[in-house]
Amino acid sequence: MKLYNTLTRKKEEFFPRDEGKVGIYVCGPTVYGFIHVGNARPYVFFAVLARYLRSMGYDVKLVENITDVDDKIIERAGKEGVAAGRLATDYARAYVDDTRALGLERPDVEPKATEHISEIIDLCRLLVGTGMAYETGGSVYFRVEKFPGYGKLSGQKTGQMKHCELAREGEAKESPLDFAVWKAAKPGEPSWESPWGPGRPGWHIECTAMSLKYLGEGFDIHGGGRDLVFPHHENEIAQAEAVSGTEFARGWMHVGMITTKEEKMSKSVGNIFLLREFLKRYDPRVLILFFIGSHYRSPLEFSAANLDEAASQLERFKNCFWKADSVLIEAGTGAPPDGRPLEEAAATTAEQFEAEMQDDINTAGALAAVFGLVKSINEYTEQASAAGGADHGLLGRARDLLERLLGILGVEFNEADYGGKALPKELLELVEQRETARRSKDYAVADAARDKIAAAGYEIRDTPQGPKLIKRTLDFGS
RNA sequence: GGCGACGUGGCCGAGUGGCUAGGCAGAGGUCUGCAAAACCUCGUACAGCGGUUCGAUUCCGCUCGUCGCCUCCA
Image (cartoon, rainbow, N blue to C red; front, side, top):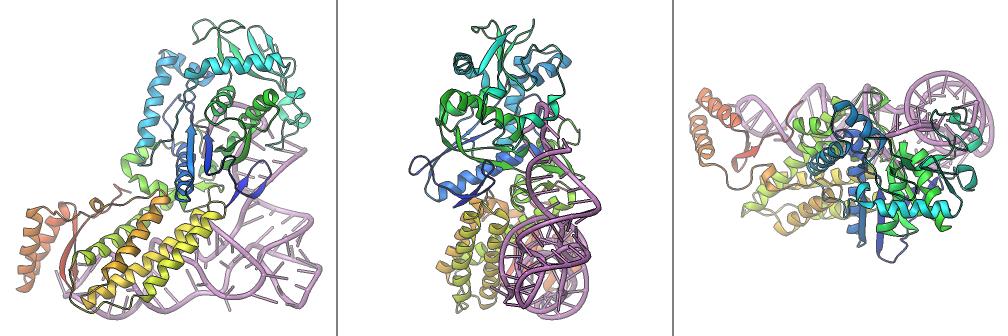
């Protein structure tokens, strides 16, 4: 399998540090507000990556942190007049609720910065001990220019950094490039005791400390949004490697930005769409399909038209499963259609899906492969329905393959999506009424029955085997 | 100013030195009382200009345009 490594700027053959095991660390949110759909992209992508690696047989450990102490949190808490700790706890819970609603499994570990203060202080102490960091005024700063590899991830050169020119006020740093690993607390701010007095972790250090704690040095994949490359990930590398002298993470994967009106979605721009608002209106799988429809490194435009397209795709999958399962439920006495095209399509799809995923997790290509299988299943069920007979084993295998591949992509289906077997009796009675009316060509009555069925959330579809019911659209609107 | 990415048919979006991506939308057809779904048919697209090549959308250069990072940001 090939994965693009930000560090080397090329696709590289992936092999794990430890045979059969993969350790992944993803930078999660700083919890000072509700997360928006842009924040959800890395969450979804790395869940899909983990699913795929597991399907390959790897034992995957996915660690995604929650940064619950930070300047932003303190600032926001100050504005709202609540305690910073309380604010962080509330938004951390909201983050878990919102991401849980996506329907994907949780990361294996979700460490919080505030629960790893002693590890963080240890790391700071080591940095000071080696001379890579220094204390001043109760804060500890990293000496950027002393670290030879600085800039290797982002391609930034210290001499050419724009903010070289910007000296910040109130910071007694040796160099404007230096960044805080430990910040002295001002009165009223959350703080912990440390060798340098009461303070809190700087941004970056918590991720270094927690990734090393849970995955160890030289772990396999470190990821996050593209915008974290500099300075966040660059600084994480500096902190870790300044202490250990060995490679911090072997591979770096960065997910492209979600844009609205061609501009990056971010809290500072103010063009955000909250994940929880999205989920009030759409099925979570619409968002997942929207994400996986393009390559993870590409920027992606968040728009109603693009979401509607994803919703249509979800419908297409739903219809395919419904139809296949309808055929599978029936005994059928007719001769089954020629199964060879479906058999071939299943083999081709599995192969193409693998090839696309092996190539830097090309989910868009993998999705195209899946649609090929949908088409073949539809053709088969179409013919089977007309012939009144089917090879249940073959169709079942094809259907299960579809379910499995979509599952790897994070899109799961079950019969509840289209109504299941146990339909309410009133609905079946309405169907009967409509059939009776149709037979006597009383179409006004028939259509009235259909409207009632529609009002109950079901749609009627006439087939050679008679009328069937399917649960209506999965998305909630737009 | 520095670093990087990208510009594909009506739209979204993969990909490749010569061979159908796929989806959505649209047109026609099959089926249906009408629908819905599904199936069949239909679109010779690769920003522009040069170059390399038997041949480039795919490689190289330039131009134009868009975006990201260099400051908090997934």
